[in-house]
Image 1 (cartoon, rainbow, N blue to C red):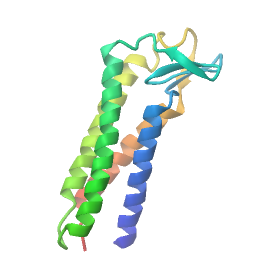
Image 2: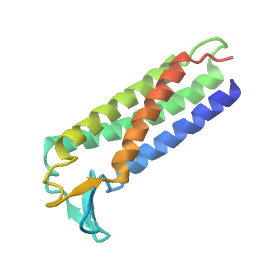
Image 3: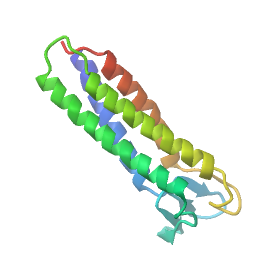
Length: 160
């Protein structure tokens, strides 16, 4: 049981770090023809990330930004609650509070990435020619899976 809790803790920390990286980095979409990428915050061309997004004032990208930031916040809150429950909770109880907080994180990731996928994943607003998803987009979907698994495991596990 101790090994399972330690492994869950490590995966939770990794998920929080991956969420942070995927939200900050500007590689959600990558152009096939040039050294250019688009993120949630900036447009990067040739390693220079000074360009602002052409759709930066749209409500959809602001919603994606907000939900990704909320997912980071809920992931860290869940981690702190888990550590607090680990040392203060009585034996035999379940980690309901940390599990439910992590499932809220999962929901925020779902909404944010779904809105981005619908509005911007293959739109012509990103690049004039072909493009593909960058590592941040893929990393966010991996965090989506991990946060769901972590949230369910927190709800099922009992402190022994």
